[in-house]
Amino acid sequence: RMAFRTALSGRRGPVYLGLPRDVLKARMPIEAPPPETYRVLDQRMHPDPTQVSLAADLLALAERPVMILGGGLRWSPGALEAAVSLAEAWHLPIVHTLKGLAPEDHPLVFGLIGSTNSPVATQAVQESDLILAVAHTFSQVATNSYGYKTIPRHSRIVHIDLDALEIGKNYPVVAGLVGDAAAALNDLRLALPPAPQSNRRAWLATLERARVLFWEQLAAMADNDARPISRMRLLRDLQTVLDRDAIISAEAGATHQWYRFGYCATQPLLEPGGYSIMGSAFCMCLAAKLAYPERQAVATLGDGAFMMIMPEVATAVAQNIPILAIVCHNNVYGNVQSKQYLNFDGRRIGTDLYIPDLAAVARDLGAYGERVEAPEAIIPALERALGSGKPAVLDVIIEAAPETLEPPTKVRVADRY
Image (cartoon, rainbow, N blue to C red; front, side, top):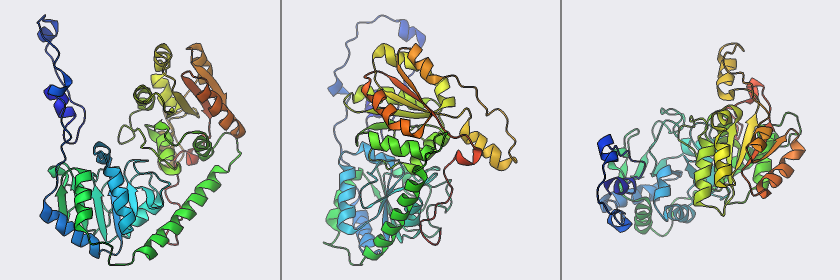
């Protein structure tokens, strides 16, 4: 009971429960406790009113405030709606640390910060005079290895988090609101005056122009009929086919980084954190499809990662879990090889792979399998795979040149870029 209560309380998360072997072997007359004895009620901890009042004063006077949404927002029902409502009322640009946490087609959402970021989102944070951070831990990935690449050196931060130990842990704050994200945002909204005192529309217009330019550049990158297939072309066509509520998982290296960089996400990406756990995308996708059988579920992973978990295709077939795996097939450990290319004059070791016909392997395991080699074949193949009603693998042959394996480090969105 305590393990379940701990997992479902506060910040929430996995719990390790160790059982000695003699306990596991013992036979005892035990009745399983009903869930109501260990589940936690919806507890909405509100922050200190003094800190709420201070935060409201700071936000009301700021000329270029920005809201950073962190992954903890997902554990607070209604928090995203409260954040968007506050942003709309107070003309706040929103950036986030988890891909798709806020829908990236919303006019006030400017994308992802941190490693493999949206340059527009980084611009919004760098030019801000106040940061409202909600359920955000200022982690290594979200801050691009700490320092001041993402968070400006002299930033003023209002930090909302359920865990008091996170407030000011990595960056100093001017106000700390310890409490549930939705409760804190609603309290803050009530403490604010009816409308912002400063005109923020000019700054928002600057960011909007930068976003349009960024999207135009991504569209130009996707308008590519070359063979092997470019990653941006694959991402664009994937977005064309998938439903708005489709679940997408990603995991490691270049495949994950390109998705974070070039996909306009409307649902939170399933990712293992730090995007380093190879093969996890397929397994996360299996669980997600079981939880939400009515939604499309797609795992995007590289060929090296897929080779590590290929037997799980048989699991998907045996359990009739109709997910789609899109494998970016280029016969390299792309993320590592690109770093070898950049740092060691093109010399490389241990990163060339020997990958079989993955579509044929999938068919042998009882799944739907198709190899995709031409850009014009992407959309029809996606439609066939999703319509098969079976676990499916699309073996997509993509470019392998080292200089194309990672997203550009800088994309021009304004003169400063």
